[in-house]
Image (cartoon, rainbow, N blue to C red; front, top):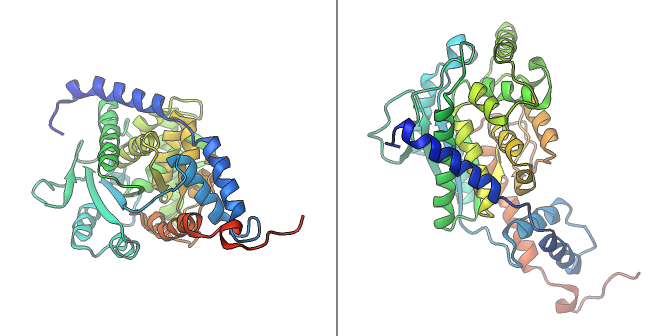
Length: 365
């Protein structure tokens, strides 16, 4: 993004307002249509369990009698965090850059799972603390080389936050033009579980101790130090559940969290079936849902991670995860693992015979 902050900020704010205003919840009429169709399929009522819920949700999001999720992609937003200066991670911040290289070489967990699911992997640099400009295969949308240390001040300038959200909004536009029908959002960023924990504590009213987990593997005294740092961050900024969601994001977030929030909002506007990954992606979803509550009914939670704050966030949003595998890798892995289940639900909806078409007797009243 080559425009100056001064030029882009007003446009970014207006664009965000337009996207939020344009979001509609899934259509109740289409939801009823889907339920009626599911009840006519050759099976006992409700016997496909949550697969029926998933199919009905896809119908109500896409507003069509024949939902489709043929083209799939996972967007992995990469960025660094200034809070790593406080030693909150078991890994050095250089790992963010190194993992981007691993993504490009096809060797990361998300590459393997995406190949299995038949999904494209889109790597987006929104704030990696390294010069990636010469790397092919990366979408170069860097706002700044890492956020600032949120223990010392806001993580982002408001203008930077809006720029990052605009990145996600624009990528959702591009995905819609390219005909992508099923999207997962994931991330890579050393230090981002600290940001997600701080956001979760504020939005849910929970303590830092309750929502903060191991992240990359910190434990014992290091974990207690991480929790103490988050408590100090929250005390410094004085934000609470009643605070403006953008103020929370501006003080505590990351560029990848802001970009995911923007993408989720605009995917909902475009009626794209969107799957949220783990703790960090769900923190971004929680910010986006605070901005537009109708969004939560447009989202699918791919899985529940091992991070304690993730369960609290999912409950806060009223989202039931498809999978629970004790994962905590991020990258979009849990969301893309859920793709085949979502596809199966939609194929059952579209391809199963009805009692009438198969000439099968219905249940006795």
